[in-house]
Image 1 (tube, rainbow, N blue to C red):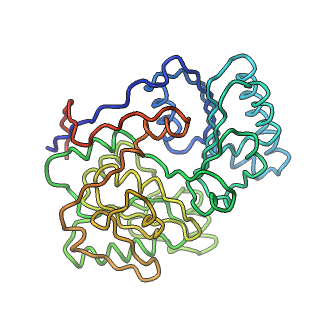
Image 2 (image 1 turned 30 degrees about the vertical axis):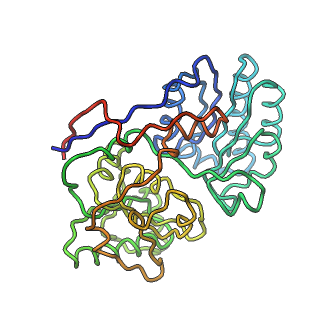
Length: 353
């Protein structure tokens, strides 16, 4: 059994506040943001863009006009809510379903609200430039985009469910783990690291996810990937299982897309859990929370695993500012709260290995 103690959350600093939240329906992160805003005391109206649904994929194939009509239905719902309620904050995460006209109308309908936008994809994946001047502040996880556009840089967050693992007692079950969707050169890098880990006698858990429709298209029609890839699964891992896997690992592998400079959310989740990180993204060296005792940057073209790094004791890391409650307060421009000490421990639960 592994004992896990949970640090306190920030106080409900958003009590009596109303928030309009627009964000992508990506894994469970939209629910996490919604629930944390409520935990901070806010009343929240959320509109989640259904980016992962099969229906949207079908609409995209029907052409740009049908896709625009589909998005317009979503926009009208958002504006209808903004027309009948007064909000203190309007928060747009990514905002692919919105457009400049919608953002301008949000500004007109909510003259007293603070409008903020957060981009967790690079500009190359979603061009949001036409909407920038509609917001009081636009923030991005991509340092290069921020420098090019004059935006505020802000890395992603991690949840309380990861933070609690920093107080876990006991021996992790796995020496090295990796969970990620199959894209670019990710699976080749992952397999090389898995082979090196096994040769070094390290225990591993690797899980490469791919949608079944993409698998059939690429493996059987385009012949891009082998029909059988080790560690490949067509079923997405649950959020609870992923949290436990990270917490039960000595080190976690992160392989970003080649064109992406922003830190993945797995980076923050791993470090937030007090686990070591092995990453292909050298940009992490620029972060105030970077520590060579906790982060090993590898060359994606010649990935080499440092088994001694994995086996060594983890060091301390100052990353409370990225915990989701503090992250949200920072994003909203609220007064910063005193961060909870990583040594605080008031509640204890036992989780199975």
